[in-house]
Image 1 (tube, rainbow, N blue to C red):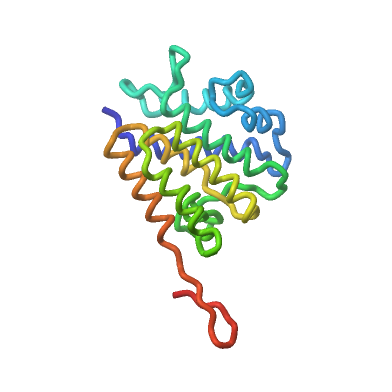
Image 2 (cartoon, rainbow, N blue to C red):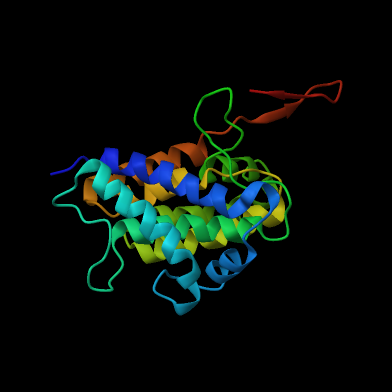
Length: 219
């Protein structure tokens, strides 16, 4: 059996490539982005313009990894775990990018070039606001409590919309989200690990305090 972690890593790289191509250094592929924004699933006719991008990348992963048992591409029209994950991440990026000129996606890994946050780390920053924390917590807790990937995707979509409205300039690591969603679908243990990682990112935030001089410090 192929390593799901290795496939997930390749999913991250491939999704990043598609998103960068659609952004086009600011010359956005508006036709594709508009199509995916209006199509909630990859099976929708409105999603057709992005199919070539996704299929090409998944074929390459299958060939490069010489996969025999894990098929990333559907042969019967029923979307695979990989297709669902990659499409969802691209669609969420498209929703976030709409109406923005700066690139809405950014890497979250610890490196000098990292300029983004994971979705749940970005939501953790919103959680600092005590006036909206309870409502946000309810949404995130409901998401973390479900095992159905469609429910998870629906909840994440609403959270991205909230994040965009609150902190539109925050870059999100959408390629990493594709990897997470893929792993979420590969088994009970993997889904639990993904949910725990999301919870750790969300609840692990630096509490801001205000000094006597009115300056903010981090505890």
